[in-house]
Length: 453
Image (tube, rainbow, N blue to C red):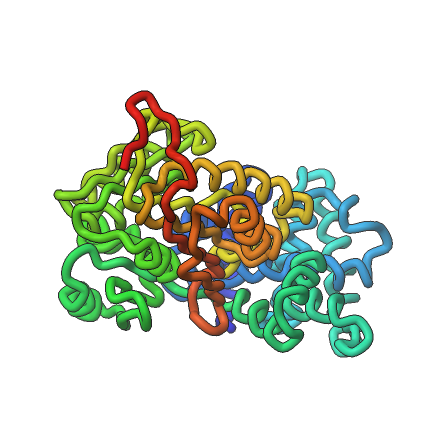
């Protein structure tokens, strides 16, 4: 819980204005919060104000569903009918009442001030009165909100007490126990702090960060990883000079699961924005080769820029992973498909993802993953390895996709590793990975020059 600046000094209001600007950027332009929030709070002169504004913005995005439920109990019309600027003000006020320990007078008065500025001047008085009435009514009900009983309705209980959509909760309960599901969802609400991948000397990076006042520590599993809580990667010389790059430990573990080694030929079928592709390039070294396929040109440029900053080589090609721009019979020692997915496993860093995604996204994305996996199998040489990863935990995008692949191509694949990384047990993004060893073909694959062994 972040302490609130004193609203009477004016700094508290400025911090809340910055938080509101971040919420508007996320909602109106689709900007991810890990970009919108730092941009919105950067102009605040005091670190304490920046921390408070960031806390309010992230917590409002994280708890949106629960806030909307609570506000709905005291509103006389649907929250969806409230114009967007005032809806954001109400959520920002509600999160202070429900989650942040801000005194009621400060939470209400600053919200009223924000409401006055959020609408045209001729309606400012009415908007201020509306927000004042709603938040004061909510404050009076804080001790008797009708939270669902876990034994009677476990889905609703977990949905509201951990701030996740019902469909996400129900999906997790299909894979895990009630207690495991609660632990995953609660951990998904904990800000992870910055994780870096050291590109050469991890011990040297740790010393450099500690000398700069950062409480840096090695990650528990990935030997390249460094945790740097509270650090802003945009202000780290180690990042700008290529000695480190922001990357979650889960992504590092995907690269390790790929079995890539020095001298390997590697295909990364969805390489943007470049974290795993450049990590693979560092592993295979100058004797190896990494070919990165990326559908979107701007993301392909990000791969190239990251590779240049880190001093590694990635052959980046713009194209569709279902029909990659490769030679007809070209096959690789290692193939990585970090597939398109709902991204629910990134909720610690981008909490709004849980509210942006819908249950119908799962089968649509799973169908695309299956098509890409068919290509990945064909592009993996016999004896080589194929790794499939997605940063999510829905059954339809993880275990069910792998089961389907083995049912269709089990004569060509041996599953050698399958793992669901979790924020509660692994302190990482919720990444799923499965690695296969490619077996000999039942019959040679046709190609312009015959099978490429």
